[in-house]
Amino acid sequence: MKNLMIFLFLAASFLSAAQASEIVPPSPNGIEFPKNYKDWRLVSTSHRLDNSTLRVIVGNDKAIEAVRSNNINPWPDGAILGKMVWKEATMLSWEKAVVPGEFVHVEFMEKDSKKYPSTGGWGFARWKGMELKPYGQNESFVFECFGCHTPVKESDYVFTHTSTMP
Image (cartoon, rainbow, N blue to C red; front, top):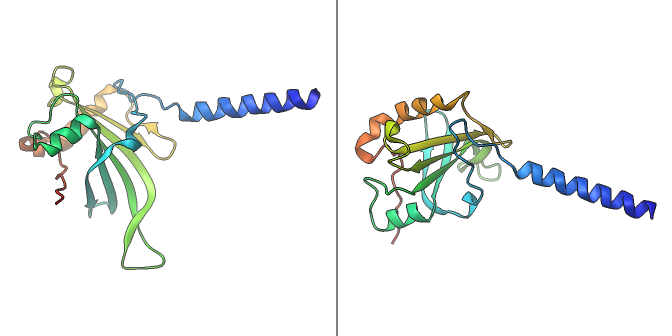
């Protein structure tokens, strides 16, 4: 009986720890971390030469629908783009190949023109590192994001060049 109680206690502790690790705090502006983003479809990829990072851009169903119908300027309300960022690394078994290295962050842009009028209709959020720590001290961090995206106003503040496939 004692062993059963110890086992149940350890199992409950393990499950609680596992559930706690899945809880990601919202960004300072209240955007919740999309729990199902790993199931979203590919929108594009990019490679930033200035900071040696590889990026995979995915979209929720609304974003994918917009890409497929070429309705991305402007993007429709409800579209969410997610970007996972890794430092570039050299593949050990083939040194000419660049592969994802250390995970840097994941960021999301959600389109809601009524909710986010001061940032071009986009809500911005970022979580840093494998621990997914929310970026920004308070909700004003979004103006840093928006400032960076302002040069691409003519493409609805989105840098991503959507991929085309046959």
